[in-house]
Image (tube, rainbow, N blue to C red; front, side, top):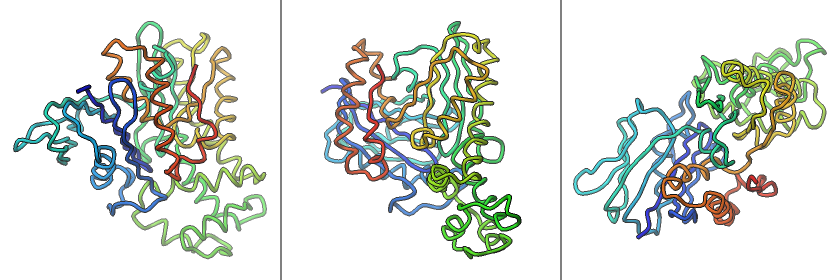
Length: 357
């Protein structure tokens, strides 16, 4: 039986798990996002999509109904998080920290590996070097120069970093809604929408009705879900909403500049890939980001990755088999699309379904 790959992308707002074979055919898909009903999980600063309950449910959904003997499990993270697989009681289990997730009893051979969120996307574009800017629930920038130097900045969470992330945007939107009534200069159409979302008074003149929500323990994804509201109001011309997206894009562009200058990349011709839910869904944010980066990297080429990032993960395993990766990535995209048509989260992106050249 061909080797199978179980790839898991566990973000703050969503979690995806796919089962693919060694030729790149997607056989199963498990999905959870914070906007849809799903397994009960405790709210955390990291986002409930990273909870053990969500990890287990998406993994099980991707494997459901498939007989798999030989499996390679891949996800992103750091070795210190304790990810791997082990045999326990005659059965293979996936380990993540102290959590244990049993695999189907038919799995006889199993291996595991870690990657980053950005490196598989670079490989999906057929590139060995370049800059990848991620703006999802969190944010970060990965850069790899042609001389092999590579580094990732940010991804530090909402307190220390995540500059330009969905959380960053949501927090700015919450603050804008709170002070909208202070003076006409701050007035924004975001105010009643954000206040209603959090059960506050939509006509609150000074923002005080948002205090109970702001002081409660919140899941990071709660703030991230405000991005759709901010983007919609920005498209209708609200100045405050547009400024929020531009400010967030400028913050991510600054991280990208830190990376590019570190490796003397700013005057060279490199591919700059944008990925993550914010970039995939907000044209205004993407335009602001590209505009900011062009100011200091005029030779960069820009490409927006709108496919689910988890689709790129199997390439990190399949490329070791010596297969034609162009054919593999085309097959991954083609076989994934029918599965995604049933997932509301991805339906808006299907009109932009495009495999990189």
